[in-house]
Image (cartoon, rainbow, N blue to C red; front, side, top):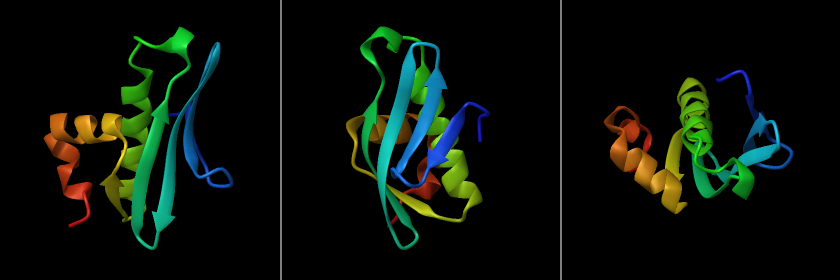
Length: 92
């Protein structure tokens, strides 16, 4: 996982701490499926690729843990569609 991205399991979200705020990817875990429900980057941090960095690290963590995903958030849906290397993570 990227060094500045952490899985805050108590809050059910991945967090990317950056100067000026925290980008988050909220999720709900149901068994071995992680449903990504919302991605949020503070307005002043948008446009710097933080959401992509956050989701890439979150998906790498999901893969390492042997889990699957259900992309419910529009950003995660678009990310998965644009990155064939992670499409195998999507639960059938």
